[in-house]
Image 1: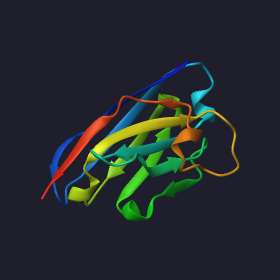
Image 2: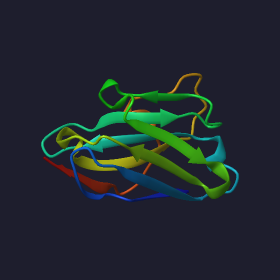
Image 3: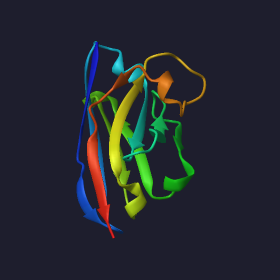
Image 4: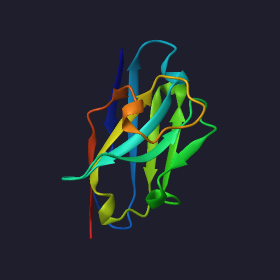
Length: 128
């Protein structure tokens, strides 16, 4: 079993920055082989893809609205995935979730159903 715990959310003014962390624990020698993703969900909206990173960190993907502002990274030794968020906008306000894809895939996935493990989420609020 894999457990994911997000942290680093909070309240920030537009134009500010936050760094989210996702700490993973559980099955030994498994997390380092998982692709990891960040998703977000605002009240009344569907959960949407934000960013993903391949198991070795050499491939990343972002939704268009965050390209150039957000950076996903991982430290497999520390079993931690990060999302650095800069130039935040009010429309970035949402609960942010970390997710793990345990199945080998040639391409990174932006589909929530393809991720097997999820954290509880951390709230990000951007004021105008």
